Length: 113
Image (cartoon, rainbow, N blue to C red; front, top):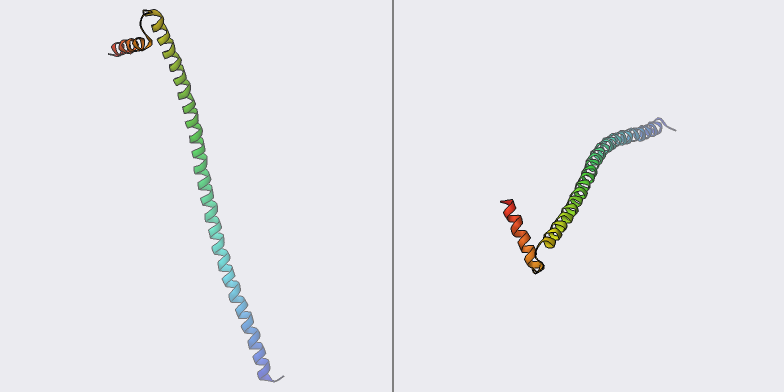
């Protein structure tokens, strides 16, 4: 092998080594960028999880409030039914139901004044 041929082989090997190093540098940069993206995604996932947890807690509180309101509504409905029943039982037997309810509403309006 001549000197020029050996020089050409060495130059080719150096070019291959240079290409590998450049490729490794690009890969390293890509890995760093991917790592930053992953860290950002982890942080965003934590934030989303926190918001979701807060929403679930809020929904639980809202559900409890609704259940309390429903129970109060049922209690009030039972009270109104009893009041209507008391009113009907103490009124004249000649009044029909509509008259009795009208009378009850009138009494309620007078009381609220």
